[in-house]
Length: 284
Image (cartoon, rainbow, N blue to C red; front, side):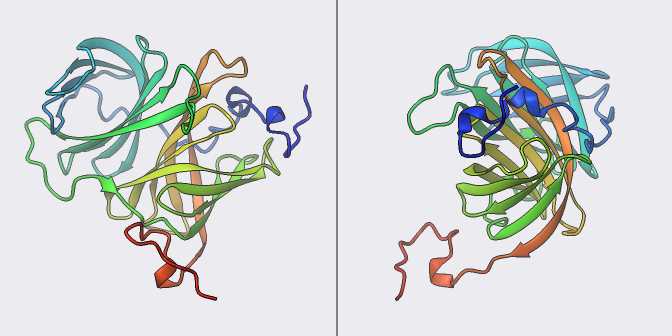
């Protein structure tokens, strides 16, 4: 076995090497969606019909105006987690397109859905990561949408959170800006490793956020949803998706974590990293 050297990223643990035991704090799966038909319509008219059974979802994709995706239909195994009252996180890995995984945040109370497609690119493209995310919003057919549509947010910027994934795995996240966050491993096989990677943050309900990150060293990405309303007991549900040690085989597994807010950084207003509409100048 290769000894991991924090300064040599070629020795860093591959995604499938992290998997054993990482899901210890995963929440129980829910079967609350079993027997339901949930059909979604995107703003451009794209429609996706979902029929949920106990552990499989049958879906049909009908592209709308300007949608280059071909019509398709299939049945995939899925996992669902209850985030809040009538709010569900659903995760499945396509059989017909193994380079894609689907995350759905289904808000039955609001009649709204946020979808995130995680896609493994054929090759590493300049200025990109090997796994990318595509975000889209939709409404649930037969319901009257209410409340705010899921939307990007800067609410996490400045927060420092400690995340515990299992008795052996713990990490720290520092949310730097709309694009970047830093992490370090506090416990587990990656202890001593740290990096700064790309992220996206969306609000789905007040205090409940989708946090998605894309790593540049390991060909993987993650989609998580976390309830930050109790900062001493933050609860998250998520998935890791990417390539195994060979760089050829997709690896997909869900997990969960408990988080604690350690601190919040307050920047000088003129230098606030969330303010992308201006170009501040540092003062001597």
